Amino acid sequence: MEIAVVAQLLSSLGTLVVASGILYQGRQARKARDDTDRPQIIVDADYTGRFTTNIVVRNIGNGTAKNITFEFSAPLESTSGHDITELPYFKHGINFMAPQTDLPAVWDSYHNVVQNLRAKGLMNGITITSHYEDRNGEPYETAWTINPLLLEGSGYSDYKGYEDEVQALQDQARAMERISEELRGLKEATNQQTNGQAS
Image 1: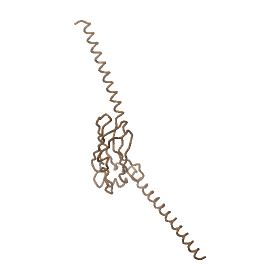
Image 2: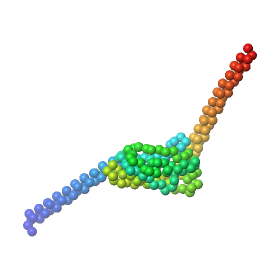
Image 3: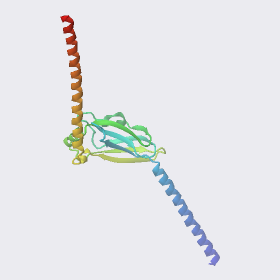
Image 4: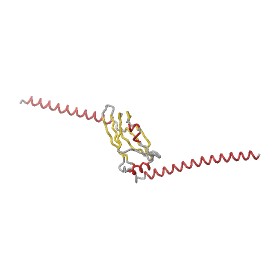
């Protein structure tokens, strides 16, 4: 084979390798862009409520999610027997969820949630699997486990217990103040009647 032919073949092979590399980089860049624009739906517990633990559906991604459905490893029940998994958006799904949005639902007080999980033997918590699509119809799935029992020993439950007690005392103080005001009003009315009859 002549040197010119060999050089031409090597040049063509080099061009093919460079073109393949450029194509690969372009695909990786597109995938990275798509990954940053993708939705990510989770169902999380929010313990920041003053008296309640809330269950929150969150789109923590930067993309729009659609056709969202949920599977639960166990029902999310309150001590009153209310099953959160029976809420329409958990039972039938959500059509659309914008990026960085939340949809909360009250579960129960932290203490009641912990007692209920223990009573049902759910020591590893409850896993919620979210199925959803991005705006282009690409399917995704995210599993998330909620386990309030993991907060035991952190001081959180004691804090929530004290906070509940303080609130109960504040409620009682307000009720006593209202009763005291009503008694003052009755006393004044009685004194006015007595003074009016004495004149």
